[in-house]
Amino acid sequence: MTDELSRRFDTLAIREGQLRTELQSHGDPVFLTSSFAYGSAAEAAARFGGTEPGYVYSRFSNPTVASFEQRLAALEGGEQGVAFASGMAAITATFAALLQSGDHVVCSRNVFGTTPVLLTKYFGKFGIGSTFVHLTDYAAWEAAITPKTRLLFIESPSNPLGDVADIARLAAIANKAGVKLVVDNCLCTPALQQPLALGAHIVIHSATKYLDGQGRCLGGAVVGNKADMTEVLGFLRSAGATMSAFNAWVFLKGLETLRLRMEAHSRGALAVAEWLQAQPGVTHVFYAGLPDSPHHALAKAQQRGFFGGVLSFRVRGHDGEGRAAAWRFIDATKLLSITANLGDVRSTITHPASTTHGRVSEDERARMGVTENLIRVSVGLEDVEDIKADLARGLAAL
Ligand SMILES: *Cc1c(COP(=O)(O)O)cnc(C)c1O
Image (spheres, rainbow, N blue to C red):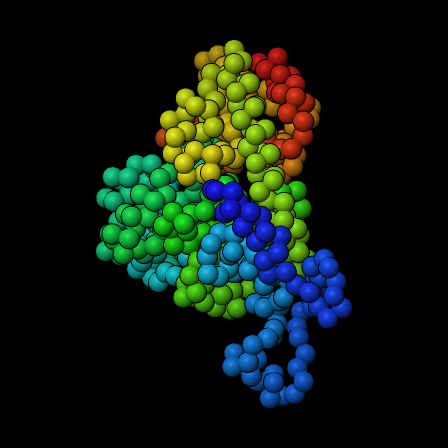
């Protein structure tokens, strides 16, 4: 991103969609109201019918939520955003709004664990098929597309192993087949990666992670063109799963510092990854910021030269005792929070095979590379020397 673009991003992050009432409050007001009153019955009818602009009912229209939607859409370079109560609600709405019975989705195997459950267990009940392929196996993506396919769904970088997909290449595959590429941009956020500019059609967020950035609120969002977002908003209006105005206000504050935080998370994660790589107790570090990562060149180009705050690594364990070694490591840390959440100012540490990927079969875990000796760290914004010192306690316990 050039300096000019970077200034534009920062200004949008702080000013876009800003609300100011006639009271001239300088900070964004929070509209904690379920509904809006009208001057007359005719005005009420016009608002409900959509012939007159204005707010109606906070299930689908609220000024604070709209402000967040506008600001996020601007940062992603999309026409319109629709906010939801959680990231999963945003993903559910995207599928429900854009798919019909008989349609088919090709999904990366390396996505947030709940997404495949949603597709297979729930959307499968309504006759929507899904096929799972490896994130970077482009031939497999092309082969999996059928005449019934409507959406391709990915996360890049993937979690926990940080595989990076060539988004422009997948967008070209989608365009050739006349289908849409949906990118869950949770791990990079628009501060580091703008999938729509790379050709993706729809971006999804769990705002719960970096958009908040301080582990306070659940939220989600979808960003895309007006036609698609009209469908997604229509689903929200009928199905609920609405973002609260208070949460929208927290996320607005989060967006204001997003780029600064993402760059700081990235710098911290790179320092931790380099340090881990030099430790004898660590057999492999997965982080695209490391120059010897197979994903380094692509991530560097696609992610503005920053690599995000999440890394993972394998620890040395005697045969068959990978889990015991990883658990000893985790239990010996004192500063890092043992939790599966990520994207917080607080560093977190987790054992994917027994937590986030605990419901995945052993075979599937092996195929994904989520081994028993794998540990994931979401590097927060504490002093990096303290984070390393804490990881050193883990290493000493191996
Ligand atoms: C957490 C997460 C989700 C789900 O978001 P919630 O806000 O927890 O519903 C979806 N995708 C990714 C990549 C996530 O990390």
